[in-house]
Length: 112
Image (cartoon, rainbow, N blue to C red):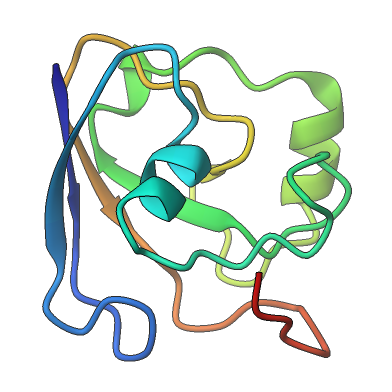
């Protein structure tokens, strides 16, 4: 099992959370399965940036971002070198520390 440590986020995960997941799952799916409601306005189809996360530790263990994800990330608020779309970032064998950005570019938040 791989551990994902979600750093505290004022609205989504105020206390932070540590979860155990099987390698091969995306960060977004792992979070949603454990009650962390990451926005995913495009239903995880790599068509928006609402699930943008910053991988503070373990970034190099993730699958490589493809060109479509890279193009979408260019539109994300608060983009950093360790940014990924959580719907595309597949967890490997290395533990991760993940930060949810304070803002997204979603104009209408929808609860899924």
